[in-house]
Amino acid sequence: MNATIKDIAKQAQVSFATVSRALNDKYGVRPETRERVRQIAKQLNYSPNGIARGLVKRHTHTIGLILPDITNPFFPEVARGIEEGAQEEGYSVFLCNTNWERGREDQYIELLTEKRVDGLILAPISNVVDSARERLFGSLSVVYVSNAPQNTERSFVVIDNIRGGFLATKHLIEAGYERIGFIGAKEGSLTIDERLEGYRLAHERCGRPIEERYIRLGRFTKDAGAAGIRAMIQEGDYPQAVFAENDVLAVGVMEGARALGLSVPDDLAVVGFDDIPLAAYLEVQLTTVCQPKYEMGRMAARILLEEIAAARQRNGSPGAASAGGRRVILEPELVVRRSSLRAP
Image (cartoon, rainbow, N blue to C red; front, side, top):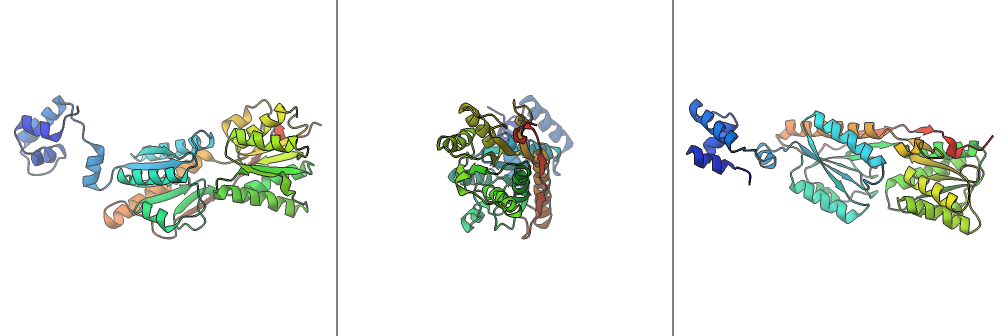
């Protein structure tokens, strides 16, 4: 069991308050008493409780990070940027994974609030922040990353998903593919709406009709991507190319097509979104829309820590950001590889 202030006080034969003042360099303790208390603390391997100290100082130098799917290689890169940005400023990060479950997301917000984290970075599942969610946040500083609800006044760092979806689909149209499908998820995040909007916009701008039968929505998993393309192939009517909402789905589309005897890209072209590390190392390298994942995380951490510092300066403790937070929308970049290029 770890030594406590009570143990030190008993051995030094002084009060708890004297031990606390001695260990925290407060006034009112004689030099010889201060030295004796410190020596006893060292002998007992005393380690102060960071949370308890945080309650006294009204900040804990911790932040919470809530992500929907740590198995998706996109999110660990975002997390790495957040963690390194936080550590450089002396903050630790509590990581929570919701597995795309709204109830679990709410539970983690409550838990992190109870742990007295100084702020929270959240990649949310839902498009909407309602009054119940704002009550869960309380006075916490919050920054959204990767996906931001439509009606939030909090700060966020996201990619221009509409632009990214437009670039991916326009690339396929310009490469000569006429029947272009879309495979995405239906978890309800704004990401699906915006990337699908970009897909539709590219068809409209290029004067091409949209064939709704080629739009399939499931889950954010590789198996769902494979199932989506398999269903179309087995129905006997499948597109010449597919824009998948993210790279994990795109990898599933490629595997599902190959399992039924189709060649990528000769029989089916595929474009993803995120540019996860695996994309460049597949047998058929994946064309994808690149997001600056690590930089997105660092930027979210920096904004959150700036808001925490500003709130502390205003009222002496961490608190919510003022209305009209920072809106950072990063520009996507199309990375063309073999999966979307016809053989010459």
